[in-house]
Image (tube, rainbow over all chains, first blue to last red; front, side, top):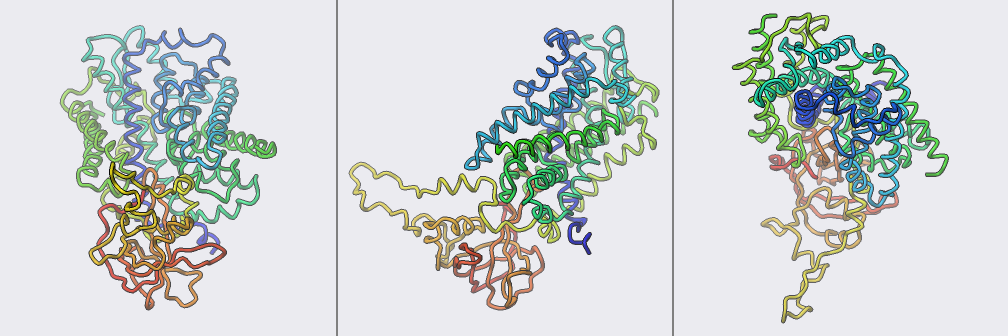
Length: 324
Length: 279
């Protein structure tokens, strides 16, 4: 009976929620894969390393702020960073960008400010950006000490090695359904390169879409099946409220451009719990677990999820004790 | 897997996705899933995917490969590409063909009713701005002939019978805002919404909830905005069926705050409105 109280699922509700997540997310996923294809064909590998600071920590700090110039939705970020890493962007720097970009970007800053007007909008927006940026930098600094083979899937490492070779000669790979991924960068005329970009985009789209579908279906199950009032009973305790709001963010899998409008409505929860919701959700939710799995090892994704959950929770609870 | 088969499968998947996305847009079904701001994006994506499908099918790619050279993750899944193909096609096909286009009672109950305007996104801002708009007088016009802000008859929408046509959300705002409350209180109003039985605070069993779903982005974030209806007799409509309620608006003090209540004179089944959501 307890299970029935907090979880009750209907197949029709699941299909409806699943379909709405797909309709909202697929355009952004496609945009990300098209950008990925264009990066593959038109961004010279040396350009990235030329503009990045030589110091890896400084590069992480810069990477986490790149969203201010290149805003990107969390749904489409994985194909982009996969391509950027293959072009020479350090993995830790790419992860800093991946974690920070759904929060540290002008669109999210404006939406957060608008959503929290009348509830300390300036403070909430500033804290969201600062905590999001700090968490991304801390996570990336920790990850920079881990070997790439423990982070990336073997197939992804293999594809990077092929790309590296491709920049010198030629190389191809196969996509989800066996289609080749890329002709050589910079070779051929403009139409040839655009064709190559499309090839990369198609395969990246299918690749990430596979995980997005699994993630969206899991998110739809929890999004419609979990009794959300059950969570509101935890609102009285700051620590429980913070962690339960992060759990809710993980379940709901909202888009970072609109999640502030939802968070602002949890009036019974303390501001710091809403902050945790706004920082954790864009970095790690049910659909992102599966999208990240397109590039990273499952064990790494699990570790990242737990690490982010604890780190963001601790930071927000500390902020609560500071009466912020 | 042969190159031809790979090309056909890839093209087929892209074509299915593109067709579903464009179909949802051009059939108008997308209105039941997304906020108007986002409705055009599936159409654009769908067209791009269909174009990609055609290019892949007709031209393929410059070079071919075999399974060993696969650079993407799914080429090496245990169940291989057929499994990936099924995952890419089957769920969207099932969801697109069976999705009811609105939430049922289970999801609404799980989300909990919004019966206080402060629980809605942007409500604080809207309430703060709640100043009646009065047009400045034209040159030569006597300002005293201008309609006064309290002259609700001049600006509130009405049906042919002269009843105010409102949304559930209007009444929640009015409950918190005295001047709005004055505009609606004891007036005949007409509302369209979805029927949900009221299982608490309903001693006589004659009340039910009339709800409309409020969305910010897509249906996945929809929240049911509910007001209480006092029916003349116990009503037994199907959960989440669309009904039209006509009755008198009241704002009794319940639990220390004004709560909107419609004392209904008539309740009848009706068709869903063209736009099912509140924004």
